Amino acid sequence: MKTQKLKAICLMLGVTFASQVEAQFSVNGQYMSRGEYRHGLGTLADTNQSGAMFISQRARLGAEFKHEKFKMNVAVQDVRTWGSVANSAIDTKGLLSIYEANVELLMSKKWALKVGRQAISYDDDRIFGILDWSMQGRRHDAAILKYRDSTWSGDAGFAFNQNAESYKLAQYTVNNYKNFQYLWVNKKIGKGNYSFLFLNNGVAYNKLNTSTGLTDSITAYSQTVGIRGEYKTDKFNFAGYGYYQMGKSGSKDISAYDVSVEIGYKPVKGFLLTLGAEMLSGTSQIDTANKVNNSFNPFYGTNHRFNGYMDYFYVGNHLNTVGLFDGYLRCSYTKDKFIYSLNGHYFSAAAPVRDLNFPTEYKARNSHLGAELDFTLVYNYCDGISFQGGYSQMFGTNTLKAIKGGNIAVASNYAYIMLIVRPNNPVKFPKVGLKM
Image 1 (cartoon, rainbow, N blue to C red):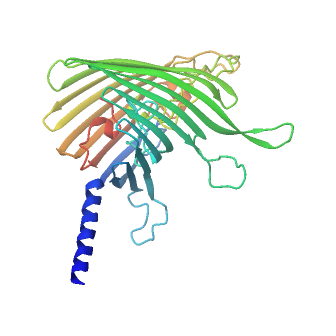
Image 2: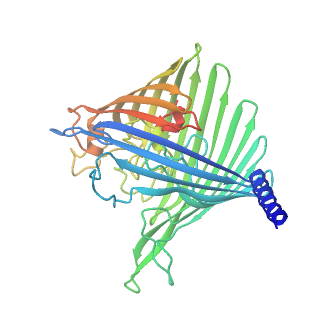
Image 3: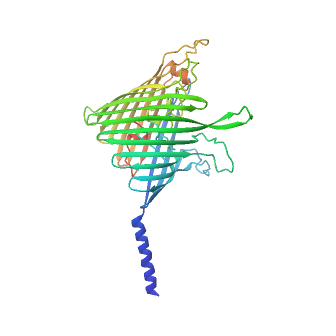
């Protein structure tokens, strides 16, 4: 009897040991808190408007189970503003949510299929990004077929969304895309890195059916296609991209583009100068005969990284408008555990802005929108932990006021300080929503 028990124990230990060899379980987490002062963030401050001050935070805990044939990943996060729930109250605001919940089937050394809720990020986060600056981040319910080898990478993604389970056809009413399909291909050649992206994006909207008198749910599809490339040497960095959009936006045809080019120079160790420009096409406010939507939409990127840190453009705003030209100069210096960065932006409208001083005529006003200065300081406390702070100010024009409202005579500025803890991932600029 004792011999049988001993054999059973040995067998259990052997199975446990074998399962530990074949599978690995790991836990990771992160914490980010940010105190902010907002006075004209996203739009010009108005007369007698007082600045907002608050502290928000994100605490994220993830676990990964890795097997020879698959990986399972789940990440839970709590996102809140300090004080939004009373200290003795029951938390019923739904601040705890699932950030990721997916499985990745490892079909071979080069091919994998990842299915479920997941973050999607490519290249510099212009079209697809994790939106890490925002506390909630960005994630998608999707399936992605992945290919990887030493120099080639390729992803084919698919998503289909619905409000909930149903026994009959139902309209999709969530403020989200109805479905998308995309292909991303990347090739590394020496010091160069080159990508191709195609996105077919479907957005549901309602349209009155004049024959039946009922409201039909229609999905409008737009197509975005483009390339991006970068090349780095010891002294110089070159980067550029171009995207073109076509298809439908609601009932309107789309013809829009986004092009950017920049060059970086390192004169001495730790110092980087970057000069660049980006043009996102827009729709004219004076060409009333044009029935085409010429306004580019960057869709699901980390837009805080682009066009200034005060989020005046394409951060939940400025869509289907006059577009943007952004000429910028970035200066950064890294010394020991500190990074200092100063960015300057010159903004103009990419399409004519109507001058409302002539109510009976369609005349264009000056296209200059303003200038912005962004100062950032990062201190690397240790691997995986850093402090970051910044100050930004927008110097708007009457044209910017005509588009967004507010008062250009009032200072529009923004300041923040934040703590970032990522034990398994040392913090870098792109990881916190900035661009160097």
